[in-house]
Length: 266
Image (tube, rainbow, N blue to C red):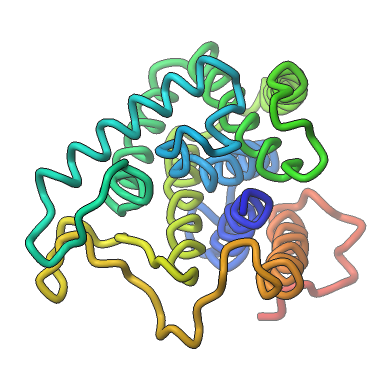
């Protein structure tokens, strides 16, 4: 579900930046980290734009719905033209092209290239879109599903605040791209533990299937929106994302009041 996906994106970004203290991605400025957090959280919802009926596809009203129809149509075409005889026959493009590592790579490279072009217009545009996805994902149960105006307003507010904070310390284009890629992969992993699985490794054929649904054994899968997700998975992901976000920010000096606590030993 949206809230779980959104928090998983934040968790993945926080985990990577907290644990990679010897790598440049673990040594970002607090401003760049915040931009990356917004992008990763929003990107964790991005793959589901391939479903025209999803709440995420209605985030920005007719604009996002039109984009969703285009993505769904493209995904369905790619599925039909690349599937093998062992792949199931199906209509529609949900859990297709946008649920693959190829898509995550393209999204990351595209984001990096766009941000490199302009910190003045490209980054604000991307921040606005991904902030909207993040807000819709997290507030899905409290926000009217058709209230695109509210989502747009909150997204604009988040974008302005983040960009005002990063005005004197531009965000790294590579970090922005990495954040989007990380968010997408977090989405794939979340879908992989549901009953349907996720074709993460397309177009690599596995078991004779180009669209092989990567997933753990059935006993380890969960129902989307079921009791396990709502009572166990979502709370655990939320708790871990808060803890690792604090640990990452502590390491880059953004939370000096926590210096007396070792949030991430070693």
